[in-house]
Image (cartoon, rainbow, N blue to C red):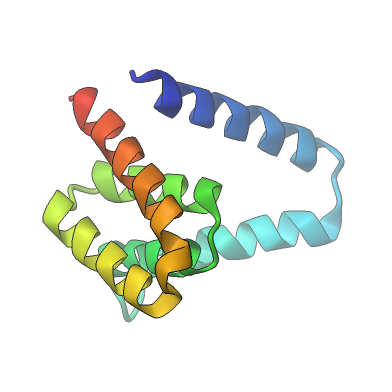
Length: 115
C-alpha cells in the first residue's frame, strides 16, 4: 500500500483508539452519529460518501477528504464520479479549495496504485 495511504490509516486508527479510550460520552456519541449518518437510508451509501467528500473539501479538511476518498474507492466509485463531485466542491468552495483538490488527486492516485 502507498506510504501516504498507510500513514494516514495508521495515524487515524491510532489516534481514534486513543481518543475513544478516554471514554468521553459526548465524543463517543459524535463518533457513533458520524458512523450512523453514512449508513444506507433514503440516500444510498455511495451518494452519502460523495456528499461527505464535497462537504469535506469545501470545509478544507484534508483528513476528511482522504477518509471519504478511500471509502468511495473501496465502494467502487469511479474516478470520474469522484472528480465530478470534487468539481462541485471546488465550484462551491472557490479557489481556496484548489490546494485540497491537489492533495485529493494525489491520494486517489495512491489508492489506485495499490490495486
